[in-house]
Length: 371
Ligand SMILES: *Cc1c(COP(=O)(O)O)cnc(C)c1O
Image (cartoon, rainbow, N blue to C red):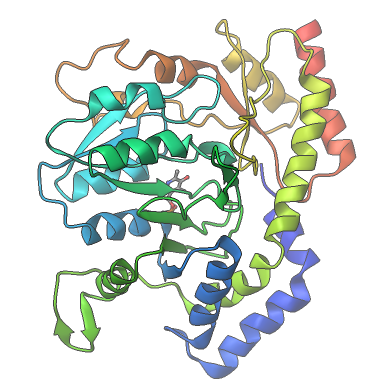
């Protein structure tokens, strides 16, 4: 699915030097590379403030700790997402309120959002799934109307660009109250371990985020609020400092692979290639196709036999997960998501794919549907 080794070898000298510098300095915690990376990422995204942290899940948790939510407050999120989004809501004693997604974009269905809002709603968490921004402009309008926070989960879509009706273009993660992302190795900007970051334009929030990520202290050993310990390692920051310079190349490469797949697979009967929204660029964290009519699992097994890996994101919708299941939740509560869990399948896509690999994969897929 990914070729992290090949990607490393291409920039090995720069990475090795950057790591060696940290080893020589032994400033493993909060070394200068962390601040340098925060500054570089702020410049890259256009965020006023970037606060690095230990991983993308912590980033979501810190965001919610910062905004002063109380137990019982409701947070609306898409039900078709990675568990981390719901997990931190539940951990903080907040109530996750699931919303179904759009069957073409895979992102939260903005037409069904307003009916989810109650007196207890405090935030909406759009997730920019698979590499494409959720439809943020209507979400921001609703949030303004009902005074809700918007926490963008940009773990899969760092570097995607959203276009507003007036032509303004903004990068994923910097449009809401707070944005979050992850540098898990397989993410579009991946480090060599765990890492994450938060984005905000609000200086007060930025200070609070920093404080909460650092045991609730601004001054050492003076704890103003309950915080957590969530830092980006200096070594990871040193790696990210190098890799951030390649992020646009990586996105371009992923788009080349996607265009190849699009052209080769568009007319194959029995599958549906990804939909591209007019309002967001796509950075193809995943290239996710749909195979209806209960053929998906046999298709996956066929490709596996040919040595082609594929993944299902996500095979069990959150509302059916034991940990998040509510009494009375029935089959059919979120029909689009339930259907997607049966039809989606993601093909290999990464920065090191070679034309012969793409050709091999597409030929096998065509073989399957023509046989
Ligand atoms: C990866 C991911 C996360 C969590 O990131 P970690 O760094 O693994 O904690 C959160 N949300 C989404 C949508 C993700 O894909």
